[in-house]
Every structure is written in structure tokens, then in C-alpha cells.
Image: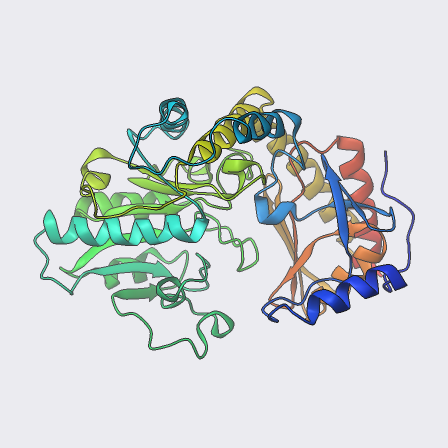
Length: 411
């Protein structure tokens, strides 16, 4: 199946009515592309008029397994009729399987389940700080965490305090102290930022929201060595890059720079419901004690059933390897097809985490035009298109989508 023929993106009376009704009530923290989606399957979405789109956003990587994967939906449906919530005050039978599976896949002995990616990040911040106070002897209130400029880790008031994007932190202050920003990819600047109060370094292996920014090959290994030498916790935010998106199970594996912990989310549930986790070494996650951190829904029977199935799909269908093969093909075809375009500054990516960066801020216009041609994706910072299709997409369908993207971006 190829991409559908171009169609008018102007809302029909039916979709326009829906959009108007929604926008009359919703806060305007999003400016959605004007399509009204009704259903999804695999790599495809259909709107209320029955028009089909190829999903090249995948819920920002949450849908690596595709829409409504039958094995994940079956697990969710089965659990929905059995036990949905127990609270971590009690044990439930699905937790052991989930925790053991996630521990095996990540290679870390400890797992702390939460709900959203932002909650996993908040967990990591609290964990690094408590470890610094309890194990390194840092004075209370003085802990520092080094982060990268142009990072994106979530939207909570703590997380936006270490953002360098004014659209994230603007008018939400005062900003929480204790975060030191350094340029991404510059090991000398990072090393210079370390002080006796540094408890951790927290990075995305590949910066997603910044526009799929890939570090120099020697950067993450150098960060790993520095953190080991200076006794600093190294945590990678793998919420978007993790679980197969980049052609490896985890982004850090491209550089063999194993961290002390990772944060996970998005594909951990295959897009069925919010599920996240922090996974790490005993010496780091061991600082949590009963009552020091928690979540009503984190690690619920529903969450663990869905996540266990989502992880099995990733492994059984070899989605990291599939993402690698498909991504290499797509990147090569994009580079060849857009090589002569004066509008293009760079095409970059790992696996099915791909970006087209323009010299000018025209990416949103192209995103709208591509939606009208049956391809759904998202622009970043005005100048970059991100392409993140599900890893289950058929090669022919991805080729067809790439053909449309090339035709649109070259014109």
C-alpha cells in the first residue's frame, strides 16, 4: 500500500464543527494540524472523513509498535476485565513479570515504574539529588545536576527550570536552582562545569525536540569516563530514543556509553496508555525508601500488563533492527533525493529518528502541505521536520512516504 492521493486539508463541515467545538473549551497549549483523527492501525491513521494518512510522527516515538498493535490491545483488554488498579501499597501478580522483563532488557537491576516521561525525569532528578546528599555528603540544598543546552525532558515546573527554550520556561518562573547548562556535545565545557556539588549529569543521547541532534562519536564515551572518574551519576533520558527508535534498543548503545540509569516512557506502552520508568543501578536507586517517592497509578496492573506486552512486541518483532534497516534506507533516499535542493541545510538521523533541517523557518508550511498529501509529521523550531514512523511500517509504505516528502521538500 502506498500513500493516499493528495487531498484538501481544509476542514470539511463535519471536521470543522468538531474542531470549533473542541477549541471552544480546550486551553490553547497546542496548535494542532487541522485533521480530526478517528482510528489507527499499524502505520496508518484515518480521519473522520475516511481519508488515510501515513503516520510519520508516532506520537513522538510512543507508537514504535504501531497503532493498536493486537498483542498490546489484547493484553490491555484482558487486564481491563480483571484488575485495573491496586496501588503500590499492595503487590499484584503482573508486577514481577514486568519488572523482571524491563530489568533484563535494560540491564539494570532496579526498576521504578511511573506514568509519564516527565514523571520518570522527575524521579531521576530526585534520585540523583538524594544520592548526592546521602552518599556523597553534599550539603543540603547545594546539589547540582549538569544538563545540556537545547534539551527537552518534559513540561513540569522543575524540568522547564533547566530548559534553554523560552517557549518552555517563559513566564513560568521562578526557576528551580541546582541545574547547570552546558553545550551539548562539548566535553570540555561539561568537565569545566563539574564542582564538588555536582551529583549527576543528565542528557538525551540524541536530542529529539531540538531537531534530532546527534553528538560527536567521542562525546558520550568521554562523558561516561568523566562521570566515573569524578564519581558523578550519569543518567540518560531515553524516553524518546529508547526501546528501538534509533536502531538500537537504547540510544547510548550506538556509542557503548553505558549510563548508571535511564528514564523510559513512550514506547514502553506502545501508545496504549501512559507508562514510564526509571531503571538503574542498586547504588543509585537504592536511595529510595518507603514513602520517599511514589505514584497512585505508576506500576498499576493495567500499566504492567500493557508494558509487558509492549516490550514483548519490541523483542519478538525485532523492532530495533527493523528501525535500523528501514532508517538507513530512508536517510539514504532522502539525502539522494534532496541533495540538489538549496533549501536543505542538513538531513540527519539514527534509525527511524530522522530530521530534515531547512536554512529558513519553513518547516511548518511543509508539515501542513504534507498533511494535505497524506503524511502526518511535525516541525521543530520552525526550521526542522522530524520523521518518526512506526518501526512496523512496511518498506514499500515507507518508500512511498519518503517519495512524497522528497517531492514536497524539494519544491
